[in-house]
Image 1 (cartoon, rainbow, N blue to C red):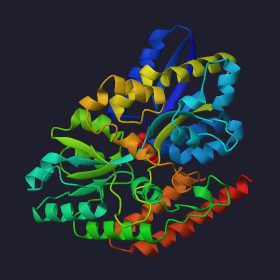
Image 2: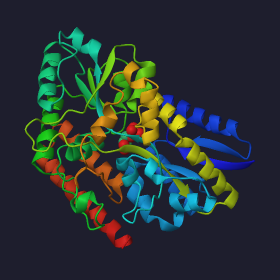
Image 3: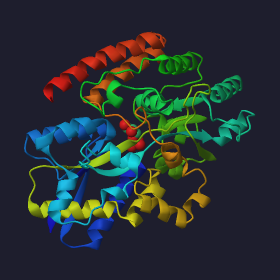
Image 4: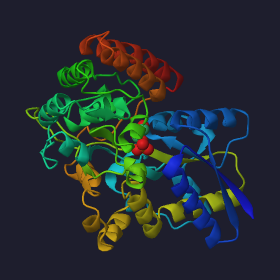
Length: 414
Ligand SMILES: O=P(O)(O)OC[C@H](O)CO
């Protein structure tokens, strides 16, 4: 059997679910055996893949979060483009099977799909209905807008709740998606899709107002900051927080652990901003095939990737995890199986992504060195939450510091 090495970033319930998929693939055929290894969080997995490539010890498949997409696209000698892999393997592969917003994220402007979509998500609002009820708030109360959320946070606070709102992935949800959802640019040049000469632009009035409001909520004990990635998930799953902005894929952990009545709602928007709500953008990760492997391995990689995106496997993955059904066939199968009727709200994420035709501001982001830029944004946001900076000063600073990294990336990849 030819061994296929697959490095990923999943632990907890998602780790169990990816292991199940690998086992199913290994059990369906005898030519290949996929060995899946957890290499840390998304950033650690990306860095492990880059370091391994430099040492000539790269895996066959590397999971890279959406943030690393531009970096991987620029790493020409290090990767085997998926369209090429499928062509050479003679595999039956149709990139048009993927929904547009997912396909577009991982496809070059020349229409070549470079990495394989796998776990795509979008941010939503998770609600602990018991917490609302406990504070004397109607659990069906409208939470469509941030204005409405603000009123509920006041009520939770007045009732003595210790964690009215927490969040995961603050830059992704409260700046990147906030910008797309309100149809304002996060960066120039169509958020980087139109050229490497892109500059950050997330210090405009909509973003400043939102971050300042979150900063005020933090000062008043209504927004509790738990960490840069998905640390807040532990607090929400334990029932400590009433509202939680997190990936749709929070579903995996919440549905298996929460001992309270929970619900998923659309991500709130600011009423009064023209064009809002537009559409949210994807997060999660895609699978990159690394260069320098044997023909047999590439045959196995093509078979495994095709298996992962087959309607049955992708539909099960979507239903188990809350990741989007990334192919139309997986979405249709899920609907036909009655899953959305039995699990109300589980189709909100895909609706939120696809309700409107994306604009130049809402197709997604393609920015080099973006993992490092997110680190800068995280630092600046933490200064706002701590009350050390106001939102305008923090976002201006993040833009200026981030632009320096973009210029370096542009020079290195011209
Ligand atoms: O938790 P995930 O996998 O949906 O990813 C969330 C963000 O996109 C990470 O950048």
